Amino acid sequence: MVADMSRATLGAEKADPAPVSHALSASLSIGVLALQGAVREHLGALDRLGLRGVEVRHPDHLAGVDGLIIPGGESTAISMLIESAGLREALAERLDGGMPAFGTCAGMILLATDVADGRPDQHFFAAIDIGVRRNAFGRQVDSFETDLAVEGLGAPLHGVFIRAPIVERVGPGVEVLASLDGFEGGPRPVVCRQGRVLVAAFHPELTTDTRLHRLFVTAVMEAKGDEGSATAGAR
Ligand code: GLN
Image 1 (tube, rainbow, N blue to C red):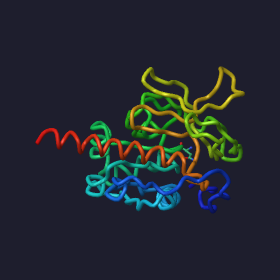
Image 2: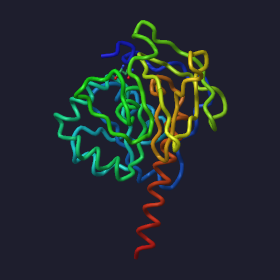
Image 3: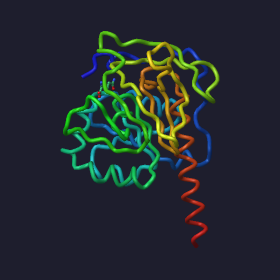
Image 4: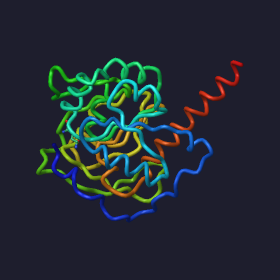
């Protein structure tokens, strides 16, 4: 277990957005995969946006959610627990079906298409066309924090990196919303998005800045809106 996960969220610095007020938000159901890692912190971020997160531990829980957050923690442990909870197929099915997802750190690894330095039996779901290398920003003692400019978010966002994965490959359909400079081989992407799948190499849930969560919630609302109009159109 990552030691830093248990600490309280950092001080509220930058503009914390107002609660999500869109009419749809009342009916939104955002799941947080609640098997291991920073589950409570993600639920807290949703709470600050005026949303109640749903803990997903079982395939039945997954059926009712409009979008899913996969927290940071340990991707190998989360992968094993997904298997033992019988969630693997249901999760793959929902992700293949276009369910919006937000993965932070280990969650990013689970959503990636290629994973280097993983365990041979580790599952990942290819929901975003990126290749990642686990623990590549250094071991836990080398964890670091830095301010990041994230496209579309305005003021810099504080990034807490804990044994973070490095994004080594970005597919053509993937937008890089933030990168870190100063690495051999050029800037390292740390926030990526493909359609309604958003990933961050760091832990936005460990600060009180909810702007990335809000970005994800907006994608979930759009997906739900599209679904609603598709259903209405079919009538
Ligand atoms: N190193 C972890 C892994 O590979 C990720 C660390 C984290 O989520 N903070 O799963």
